[in-house]
Image (tube, rainbow, N blue to C red; front, side, top):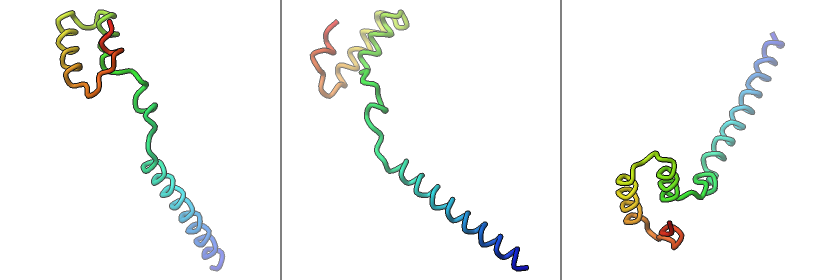
Length: 84
């Protein structure tokens, strides 16, 4: 009977180790801020629009309409975004 008790003790001991490792790992990955380089590769919306226009994925009218919206909504337009 003592053999079953020691196996239960080892099982519970392993369970709690795994529990704490998973809990700490989850807390670390959810609390740690994600670097901005991972969130966006530095490509701005206007750059994407220009690339899609150059590839023929959007028409001239659609390009102009979307460009006007993006430039209007852009908080701090940089000089490079207005260059064609």
